[in-house]
Amino acid sequence: MGGRASADPGGEREHEMDEALRALAEPRRRAILRLVAHSELAAGEIAGHFEVTRTAVSQHLTVLKNAGLLTERKVATRRLYRARPEGLAGLRQFLDQMWASSLEVARDLVEADRAASPAGRVSTVITDGRASAVTTHDRTSAAAG
Image 1 (cartoon, rainbow, N blue to C red):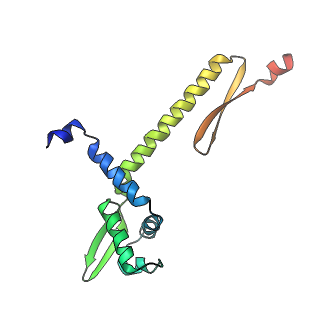
Image 2: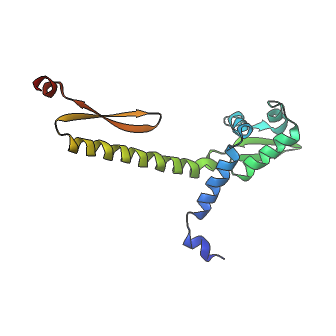
Image 3: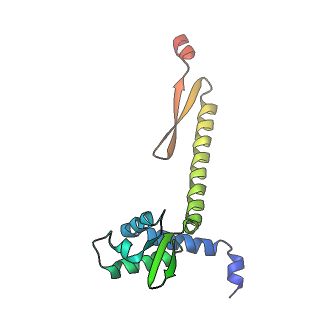
C-alpha cells in the first residue's frame, strides 16, 4: 500500500533509526564500527580483534550492514567493510532535535526565573547534558539588604 508512506513521511526514517539503535545496542557491534570507522578491513581482520567465532563476527557484520551502518566491498574472495556514517544520519538528527528541545526548556526556565526574581541574576549551569537554572543575587543588592 503506497498510501501509507505518504501518510507517514517520517516512517521510513524512523524505521532506519530503530534499526541503527538495535544494531548499536550490542557492544561488539559498536566495537566493530570503531574498528572500521577510519579504515576498510577484511572480515578476518575484524574477527581477529574478538574472542568469538568468525561466524559470530559475520553475524554482527550482517546486522550492521542491514542497518545501513556498514558498506561491504568484495575483492576476489575477500569482503572488505567500512563504516557508513550516513547510516547514522536519522539517529543523529533525532539526538540533535532532543538536545535543541532540552536547551529550549532550559532557556524557558531561566527566563521564567528571571521574571520571578527581577532583583536577582540568573546563571545557567549545564552538567551532563542537563541544564538547570541557579539564581544568584547581585552583590550590590545583597550588600544593601
